[in-house]
Length: 143
Image 1: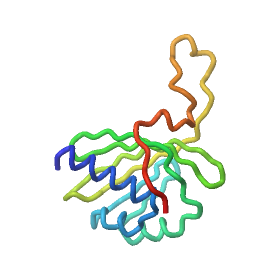
Image 2 (image 1 turned 180 degrees about the vertical axis):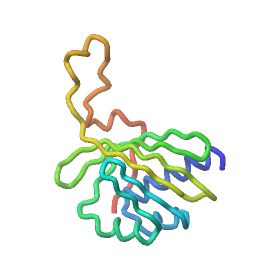
Image 3 (image 1 turned 60 degrees about the vertical axis):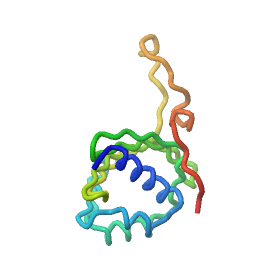
Image 4 (image 1 turned 30 degrees about the vertical axis):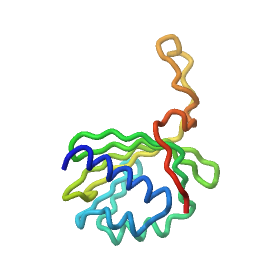
């Protein structure tokens, strides 16, 4: 699969998440789909389990901004997520495609934190860690 196709599929994936299009998401998943959350030690195996997790997720977040990086059939999706309870998280998902479908997704989530003062002389600030200005793209529409 070429990188342009991978990028197009990642854009579609973002839109499906952002508009809560479960059927669209399921259509994008390979029959052998696996999603992993290393921080909690969880693995979701198969479309049916993914569907159940997604449909039972209380308070899905809004995607405020995202960046996409692509190398062959692998894509990296960085997102700023805004949850209904006011929680803001940075997320990074590493997706691998097979037969034009998502075969594997490994997702990491983290709360933004204040920059350490001790390293300030060697770094430059990117902006507020909760700012969508740190992301190149914004999803459109919302269910």
